[in-house]
Length: 452
Length: 140
Image (tube, rainbow over all chains, first blue to last red; front, side):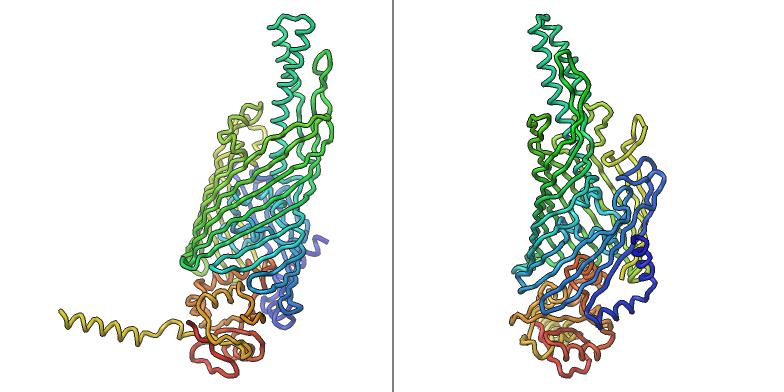
């Protein structure tokens, strides 16, 4: 099936664009699509689940959509989409969006089906290479590994234009998620960290008290407690989620393009979602004679609240576009029941910001640049807490990305892009067996895309 | 000094009278069913960006674009976007399901004919096009 669809895309790219447009004009059915193929390589290490150190072509996306207006004010349509992003996507087709849209008046319209999530300025179009200058959007705002959480909502929504340049979108339903989402993988690391600390302290106190009851001298009892506490902590292990199920999801967006300042627009967007995951959690067996190995139990972990807030501003003047965005993600796990004991996991705040600029010099050439900064736990910005865990590095706590990008429009349908990234940080980086990973590294990407 | 000031003032007045406003190079036309006689620049921008979808009587707006030389002038004057930016805007709408790309016509005649036959339609042609069976919209 996958091969048939890919072949279909290749055939479509060979069909003259006019033929598709003609169908559009005469049947009132719009058919549009895009396909892109990229190449990505880093000077060292693998990035974001892609084998970038060796160079990889597992870096593509494609989509095709159909839409029509069967009645006055009513529009229906659907888009199927597939991507390959290293370990993610693997060219499996999915319904990207599919909904009916009824515009009641200029102020109010309703949608039902699967709609795109409005988050920041570019989340809704993140998969469409043709609509932006750069190949990759700033990871500080648009985390590739979290795309499944931010792609769409199945449910109902409302939207409209308001006076004074305001517009809004609301959506309510069930979101998406995959067990490979970075958000959940990061959460399992945080959970392990918190559990280890709590169990170490609890075991140390319990064994010290036991030794004192048996008549050991205080210093010896304390040392025994510490030893058993360390053994208990070493048994703690939280695996990455084996499954994840999305629950209730809500999305709101408010945009303002003030009439007095042409080209300026402000955007505030918010997403709330609940996710249920299953993780294998290993905890120590605490016996009367000391720590005796550990037991792994498959545990339900309900993520009470993943909320994302993105504030953005964009200014367009002539052929120049400037933008700045700020992203805050809060992950609240709440209580996790471990061996029957409720264990409270503190809220984690993930922060990112990015600034970007682009300019179109001629019909065929555009130049752009951006800088993004991403921290996976605001309470540990310098990574010192992370570094205290054996085998972990403080630079895993962040990723700073300086990107210079070029876009060449070969014609209205074909686009070629080249870009380079200077990176600082090790979040989402696989450094293999390097005992002293270098936090400064480079990434190169190129992509050719076709759209009609 | 006084004569120089009067001369400069006269020049300004003559300039105001004889400089052809950019609006005049493009004519906005609509189907005769459209009750509006005039629109402001902001309305025109909102219509061609798909933000304003209904006329004041709540009938649907059906806007169309041109592929003639007047297209670039129209976008510059009313939409504050280059043709690349306008195309990109509609790509975003199309690939998120928020809108259907507007119909585009290769000649003024074809566009005028479509607007004349389609209820709620609005479009633009060059100022020297022969207008028939459609109404001209005044821009405030």
